[in-house]
Image 1 (spheres, rainbow over the protein chains, first blue to last red):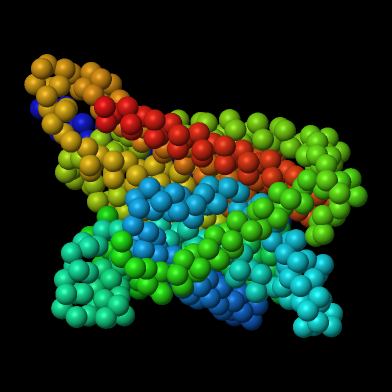
Image 2 (cartoon, each protein chain N blue to C red):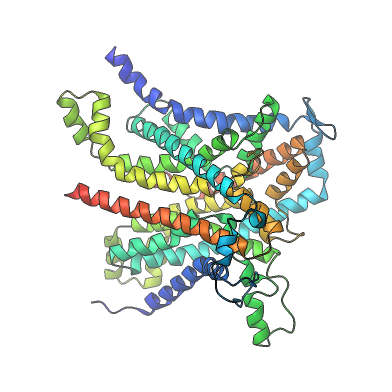
Length: 285
Length: 269
C-alpha cells in the first residue's frame, strides 16, 4: 500500500499542472490545427478538409509581406535587446561589487516588466507624438523645419516599443548566467596576462552563451506573436502576423486565422530549434 | 580600494541612460496626469491639479474603469491561488525522478514561449466549437494560467533545488506524515518565496493583455479596457488611469519585497 503510494505520488502531484496545460494549451493548439483545414462560408466555419486556407496564404502577396515584416521586427528587436542587455547585465554583474546595490539595480531593471504593457506603450506618446518632446527639441534646435512624422505610428516606433517592453527577457537570463561565472576564472585569465577584451571574448562570452540563448528564445517568440505594440505604435503600414490573425478573428475568419497560426507556430519552432542547435542551454536549467 | 577603470564609467553612463529609457516615459505620463483642467496629451504641462486623477472615477470620461479593475483583481487573485497550488505540487514531485518528468517540463516551457496570440486564438476556437460563450473567469482564467504557471513552476524548481532535504527527513524520522511534514516543515520555509511568486504571478495576470484579448467575452479586464480607451479617450484622463494602475503595481511590488525581506531575515535568526 505505502509502496504503491510512493510510486504514484509524483504523478498525483503533477496532475493539476498537466491538466492545466492539456486543457488550455495542448487541446487548443490541436483545435487550431484541425480548424485550419475547415471551410469558411463568409460568416461561419464548417467542418471540412480543405487546403484552401493554406493555399490562400501562400499565394497572397499581402501575407508574404506580413511575414517578411514580422521577421524584420524580430531581427531588429532581438539585436537591440541584446545590444542593451549585455552591457547592462555585464555592468551589474562585474562592476557593481556591493551585493545590496546589485540587487537594487537589478530590481530597478525588472520593475517595469511588472507593470502594464499598454500603459508603457501609451507613455511614449508625449515623447514621440507630432507635438511631442522630441519634435519640440528638434524644432527648437532648428534641426528640422517641420515636425518629424515617423517618430510615432511607424516601424521605428514599433521596434522602439518592443525593445522597451521586452529587454527584461534578455537582461534576466544574461545577468543570471553572468552571475554564475566563477570569478576565479577571470582572475586566472588576468594573471596569465589576458586583456579585458580577451577575457570578455574568451571567458565571459562563451559562459554567457546559454543566457543569451534563453533570452533570445524569449524575445524571438514574443515578437513573433506580437500584435499589441504593432496596433498601438504602428501606423497603417505596420503589419505583423499577430495583427493579421487578430484582424481575421475580428471578422470571424477562424479557419484562415488558424492556418496563419499554424504557420506562425511552425516558423517559431524552427527559430527556437535553430537557437538550441547553436547553444546548449540545458546546463542553465 | 581598486581604482575604477574607464569602462566602469562608460558602462555606468550606459546603464543610467538605459534606466532613463525604461522609466522616462512612465514619469512623463505621471507628470502629465497632474495637469490642470486645460491639459492636453503633450508637454508643456498646463497647470497643476489632481483634476484628471479624479476624472478617472467619472464614468463618462473613461468608461467603467472600476468594474474592470474589480474583474482584474478577482481574476488575479484566483490565478495566484491556483498557480501556487499547481506549481508547489509539481515542484514537490520534481524533486524525485519520475517517468514523464521531462515531457511535462518541456510542456511547461513551451507554454511560456508559444506566441501568446496562439493561446488566445486556440482557447477561443475551443470555446467556439464547443458552443460555450467565452468569459473572463473561464476562458480568460485558463489563458492566464498558461502564462503564470510556467513562471511559478520555474521559480519553484529553483527554490526546491536549494532546499535542504535534511529537515524533511528529520521530520519523517520522527514519525511525521507527508502532510504534517509539508505543513510544519516545508511550507514555513518556502513561505517567503511563495509570497514573492504570488506577487509576480498577480502582476503578470493583472497586466496580461494578449492572451486574454480574444477570450474575455462580454466584459473586459482592465488592460483590455485601457486598450479600448486608447482609441477614444484623448484627454489626460488616460494618463491619469495609467498613473494610478502603475502606482498600484509599484505598491504591490514594494509590499512583497518588504515582506520577502522581513521573512527571510526572520528565518536567519
